[in-house]
Length: 383
Image 1: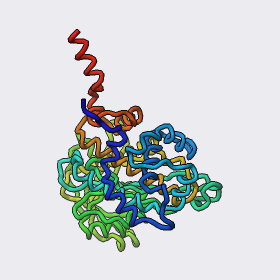
Image 2 (image 1 turned 180 degrees about the vertical axis):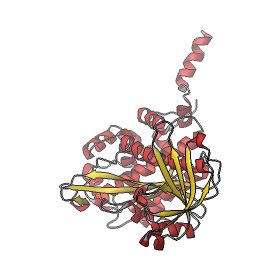
Image 3 (image 1 turned 90 degrees about the vertical axis):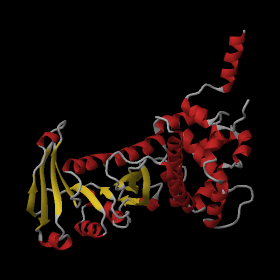
Image 4 (image 1 turned 180 degrees about the horizontal axis):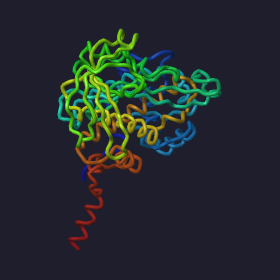
């Protein structure tokens, strides 16, 4: 009969230990550890993310219940004070670097996006994470409110968060957007919060395409009109040039304006793009697909612990967020590797219920019965 380590151990083996230790040495500060380690911190906090623990005491007691299994995980049991101290003091940049490593591994086996064109497709957006100002005074957002902002550039190939930045709540979305370096030829879907005509010009010069919604008060003149298929909801396909005093200076390049009426809701949308090769309907569908980044934010907020925190310092908060994002990539890697038609949420629920079971991870995802059950069935058939 085959022997398996726990499901949790198999999940953690997706991260080569030597790579993790190399990163840990690169992102170390302060005194060296006596018994604790960054790996023990990662194992403990990842377990807390999967099982939904809500406090340091809750995390430590949950780990204590599985203390006999920590040896096989290569982890030491951390006390509440040790875990708190490591979260508060040891640089969160370790998990930011680990996220980059995991992303490249996921990207290598991720499926392509659902459109026919070959250009890389991204959706860019930001989500605010509210914090109590009296508990997190470093995260001042308004007079009586604290917040940080999670900015994500979601790659539609596998719906992976390729560009991730965590900033103060006051930072505007487009300020971060300008700093991102998208690959040449890629398409970026953005909403009106990223309206910046200078940035539109820069993206065009870099040969990066964008799809957004045009502001209702934008001043422009129509250079060319093209016929559209009204049966598909399209109302216009125009080449325009901005005529506003400041706007025309910031963006002198002719752009494409597309009108689309949603058949279901009856709402009329006008899109703006610098891509003249794709069909008007494809441009409208690209903006509709931007909703995937909203679903990403909804998923991580509902299924991972990034809204309530077990530490109060900025480093502790950032550590918890980046570990949660690393777990998201681990789940995505398992999903891609298994090639099963299971959602990320289904995979997470299976892990929660079987985290310390000694079963083959892929067999668990396939829904195979445990080997003991199979053996008992064979014995009963003989009788």
